[in-house]
Length: 98
Image (tube, rainbow, N blue to C red; front, side):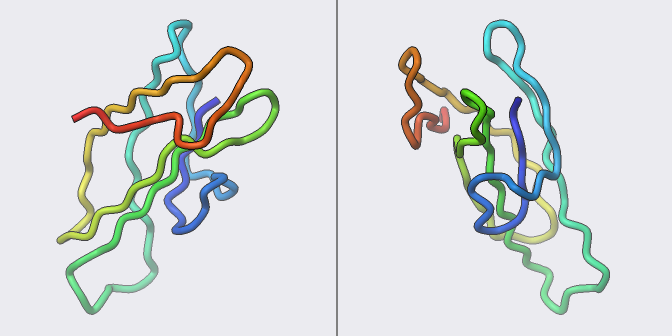
């Protein structure tokens, strides 16, 4: 399973906003989300935080996190390359493809 959290600092994705599962080849797609606010912010700039985690051997592990500061809610496509050694997990196993 892959989990998305949009809560700042939630590196283990304990506040899951969305989740998906991987295909047989390990690929997945998860849509971006906008934090819902019960008020209208004074500023038009927002800080979008997101954390991506995976369930690995029964434990939720951080794969990647990023943030963006800009006008409005920016939806962005990110392609990650993740490399895992068989039977082992290493923090920061994923990097963004440019």
